[in-house]
Image 1 (tube, rainbow, N blue to C red):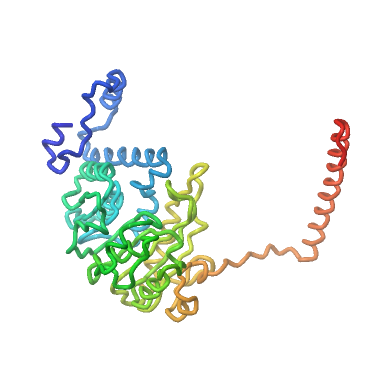
Image 2: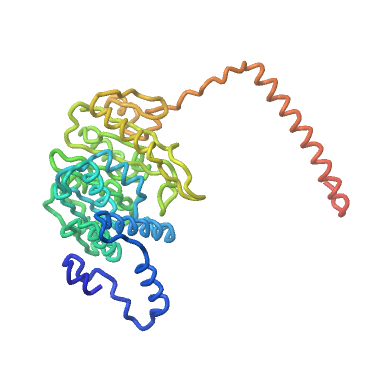
Length: 402
């Protein structure tokens, strides 16, 4: 660890130095070293950096899963990060995450650039994290991939109270900040210059995060942030007014409603807000995508998005932006005008706009269906009577009467 830190200045005081401690089981440590030594990592191969990265990513995901609620503090599920990156396409410029966790947004941005034959040196990452352990995870995560983490900062106060990049104007902002964060410092920051569209309430930092990001967005920048669904409809403590101001300023470009159970730390459904300074062809329009029924259960408690789900959402968004091959699809997507949004009192829940998909007619006549259903119901009612008599009989045997 000391040798690695010496060779990689950005990892100074980041790596764990616990391996010489007396209370560490020497046998376990030896077995771990053997395990790694005997694994064919093909270090000579040019893909070895990517392999290490994938191993690290796998462990982060497993830790997040094992940690449950706490895991979500440092890890955003890969499918969500991939979707956000594929939609805003951070090819070139400054990429910023004000709640950067273990650096997943930066890693996926780097992957996106390299997969599209771009140059990784064309993007610079800026981040901030208040949890020191999580920040250390991110420094290691980025170092493995040779991503410069010089501008990924840590301080205990966090992005609101001690902004590590006060003058930054980023081309791309990607974030998954804490949902519905309470006591975030509103009382200290009442007159802050970031609250251009309204002062966020102390009980909920959703619109504080959003406005903090907007403040750091360059004139041609685009941002994507995950927030709880409450941000789409809440009217408490002036939140409705802030949302209205954002819509009327023509900053909101797209809202994607996500399925439940995607996150490790919460079962509540969430959404992604896409905000853009220059909307060009879609000025005064907002694209609503309802992906709440998409995905598959990868285990008993966690849902995931399949690659085809990500592609469908991404293609819909890009086609809409380019005005090519886009059509509203009932139950899935709708391009709504500012007038329509006003009619809904600036509530941005996609379900309100996309509607319910049409049921496919199975071709069976209503009368035939009813005959079959009533026959089934009669059978079930007869069975119920039979079971009730049996219960009565059994209870009587042990001295109880209904």
